[in-house]
Image (cartoon, rainbow, N blue to C red; front, side, top):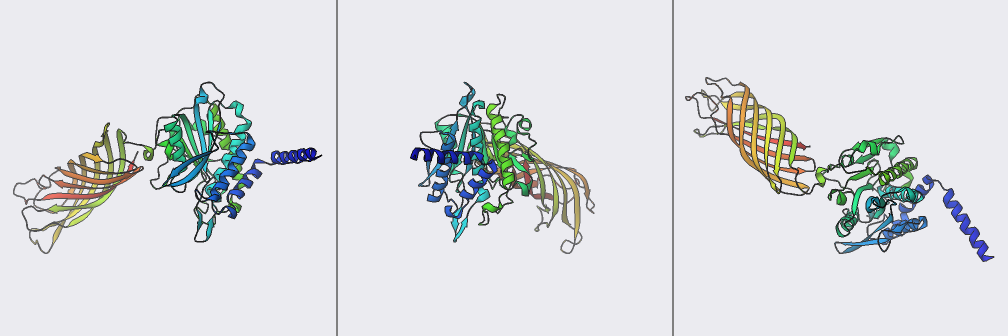
Length: 475
């Protein structure tokens, strides 16, 4: 009789589980992860451990297997222990099963601050819920998978992407596995508010528009991750030249605020996003022609590219130097912009040669020789400056650089009331100091003329100086 009752209860439980819609399961997952009882799932905390155990229970119920000997992949950062949950679905193709697709989401959040619980429903209960349901759908279609799919739940993302970096180190470093794509699902619960799902990193995939296309929802495709102040769980893989997609509905939710609660999530949208990502994972894991493009986001490059090109608007000042006089000229406003190209020296990547072409509208006060201490004349000119410099630069995400060289100048049109004519050609020295972060840079360039400003030998000895602040957008 007891066995009969047990079988009835088990059958009822299974019937309930399978009768649930995906949207209902997503809702359950988010409400569990974002409940006050989990106190914001601070990385490495007992509450985060409860979230990890919930994920393990879901994976076991599907028939998934752990990638390693245990469900938990422990790692230590700054003397504290954390753990990822990593599952695997082995591919069925004899050759392609040795290629890996990784899809993951971080399950930790900010915990409790000043007595307030940061539940992190969108960030990132939504992504964690989506990945669980993607895993469920993949399990149901495991026979169609040619490549092996790794499903990861990351700890300690909020502290600095430690969980995803630990998995990247293990898979790509210690294990030497062939990872063909990594997808990070982070904050995907506000589709209705943004009316788009953003995929960053599409240029790292060959023929990406064909691979990613869908009619199920509105996609916003970004070639690369570019922000110098933000990072996602793709980073550890992207820096090892693995194609990556950072997937999100944006930050319109109460990002990193106590108000990020489960009742604000757009569950219809989350269901659509999960459906699309399931199809995408199936496509990538089964498409024999899927390949990397060979392109990498600037912020993920370990070194400097051979050629760098930038657009550079600039503002600054011009002034006149009077070498033979006991006074200095005042400064005037200058503005303009142009392009630059820098060739880096391969194995000597700390060095390069940079050439700019800057078109400027320059102005500067010029002393009136008839009343030196009481009045001045106004110089205005349209000028081309072409500085060519030897560059020394650092490495890493934020790269400082120093350049020194010379420049060629050409004055197209000048205006200065004077008895002497302004020289058209100009040569001088140039120095530049700057910083490159991600795809942007900020620099200051100084140019000092070595040639006389006037043509006539009887004219006063005058040299032109220019200082510019340049905002550089690299491509």
